Length: 411
Image (cartoon, rainbow, N blue to C red; front, side, top):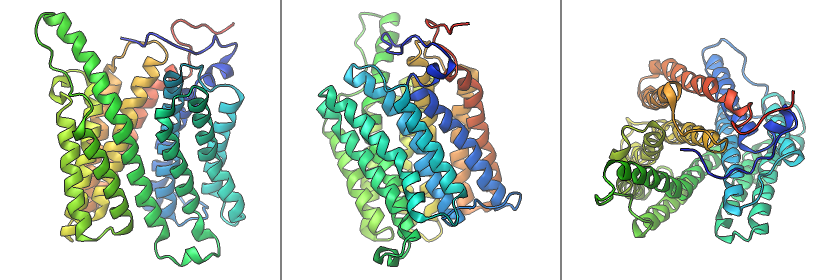
């Protein structure tokens, strides 16, 4: 089924269409950055392409761009579309959205080609996207008095702060004396995304699942008792609290045994939370199943964090990529696919290309975890990642660049 309410105005031209809602240009940025950044990184690692002319080291560049650029554009696209629904207002569009996307693009240029440029200019160019996104989302929430979603503004403010902190090694300040500052920031940003998934994914996944199950069960047997996801309750709250606690501990004490114990607890609570959402009932619906599998990777990633602390044979990179590829990239594909269809009043059906993309991104996650133990698997993991996002681009770029079925562009 499609969404029943849409706020996009009738576009006058292609440019106005693209910038009529944040999900359109920012999901395009997500798809392109997933392909370009990973292709550049793997080509550099194997000597086929030079490293970025970045103010960061190549590894720091890779970490920063995947967290704050690729994932950042997906977060922006989702939130700008979602906040219109939360607030009941027209979506952010036109010049403010053009400025936001321009900030994202300028940030990518600064980070990839800004070696030798003033660190202050690089910082301003790169952080402007997060600052403006926070302002735009916060403005919509405040105007609509939708105060219960102010926690999203807090999360965006933390992203803005972390993105700025990532740059401190480029400055001569006392803080640059902190060893591995960018690693601290990277872990914090990764866990902040996990927290955002716990907060928002914990709302939308059971809601979408419940709506679909109601339809299926009514069609099959209207009089039969319905098996629906459990309502929000203590299990959800404790899972979120455990995730927050793990975020603090793993950021500051990544090798401490107490961190491993908390990781096991957080993993158990997240998996238990997911088990209450009727995941097995979605096996025949790829658009929903992909959401459940993506969320499952949170629990898996937390468990691998614990294993990596207790066992030196399992590198922490396995946990990082379980979370970043399995949970984050997997959920980005699932949520972007659903949002692009829903916000343009199209049927919520995955189709063959996206079903394949969902399968491939999970294979990429598994292969990338293996690559932490067996580096020869790394090229295969990269190919699978690129294939997943190529399939997404082939399926969704035409949708993102085209009018909704009820819209037409002037000749």
